[in-house]
Amino acid sequence: MSDENYEEDDLDLSSLDDDELVEQMHDDLYDGMADEIAEGTEILLARGWSPDKVLNDALVGGMAIVGVDFRDGILFVPEVLSAAGAMKAGMAILRPLLAETGAESVGKMVIGTVKGDIHDIGKNLVAMMMEGAGFEVIDIGINISVETYLEALEEHQPDILGMSALLTTTMPYMKVVIDTLKEQGIRDDYIVLVGGAPLNQEFGDAVGADGYCRDAAITVDMAKEMIALKRAA
Amino acid sequence: MVSVVKQSIVHTSEAKAVIICCSALLREILQVNKINGWDHFDVQCISAELHNYPDKICDAIKALIDLAKTKQQQIFVAYADCGTGGLLDAMLLEEGVERIPGAHCYEFYAGNELFNTFQEAELGTFYLTDFLVRHFDRLVIRGLGLDKKPELEPLYFGHYRKLLYIAQAADEKLQIQAQQAAKRLGLEYQYHFSGSGDLGRSLQKFNAQIAVTLV
Image 1 (cartoon, rainbow over the protein chains, first blue to last red):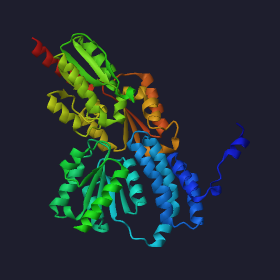
Image 2: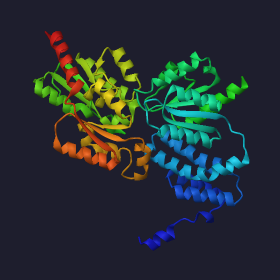
Image 3: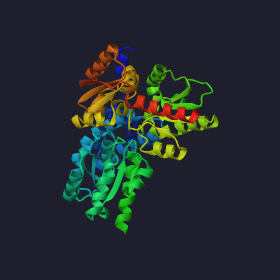
Image 4: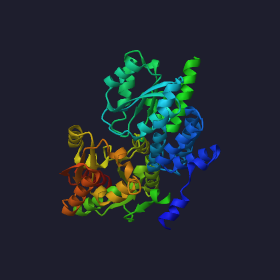
């Protein structure tokens, strides 16, 4: 097929109606097409869609499909990362607009990868999905000591503390952090969620976390549920 | 995905003992057995690709333990925790089976103390063994999808600074391949020769136990 034919096959996103465009954006998210997501986001905004409607219907809705297929073993980490990269392109456009609307955040989360661990793919996915779900997320990075976690909690007063680890050797540090929270009498001030490839429910229970999050989508659901319960109490 | 959980029986004698291992260790285990003249072990392995699915590791090893128990074999597991988050140890404790200590194969090749020194020197160290050098393209480049999505490389390796090749064999060709891997990932290259490390010592210990039991 010649380049000319490729040109002819290119889809003009602006020619689609709203429903078709959202559906196309779900497909583009699935395929990790960042430029197309940015373009689709701009088109919907230009048509008068509110930033939060674009976020929820086009981006979060699309990532939900990605999350389900990841959970079901249809998609793997590289594809999820590409999809996340595409969502990031849309978020970059929406973030300042969402801030302008002054919408109240669903809750606040401080998140970081534990000391001794430099891996942040999972943490970054969770941070992005939480932000997409309306949470204010303060990402304090990798290789985080208990002192740094405590400083961040003190400074930001979040609802949720999220800790991530990829290594079997570093995940026990989560217990160090939780035990320190207990020693200082502030453990119950926060919902503590833990996650990472080598973790499991037994580990989450053993270290005294409120929840073990198997993936980013589950983290969002769990966070919303636990915040609702805490606020209702 | 059948290939991932494929299990191989390498030696199928009526041996009274079995080493259950990761295929990443198979070559070195057979080498240790050969050097020591040990022909009384079955060696059974599961695919190294299970590292990408750590939740499947315990079941795969348990299946081989069950098989060994039906043959009344003594069992040693040459498999590190490898991301099972302690579930492998919990299962082995229940089964009364020992394994080589360590979180990862590069840790027990280097030895725990030296490995900790490596980690302290540079947290952002990416480790390769002979097996990982040999299969770098398949397991790392293609395994992480970097052949199709090179733009993901900074996400995977952005915090790494160094590639440390912990070598089991003194093989110049592998050293060149490891240097090329470091260059490919934009990492500083370092080499350490470990030989069979704690793997060899653990097999010696198991063999001694077998000898006592079988007398």
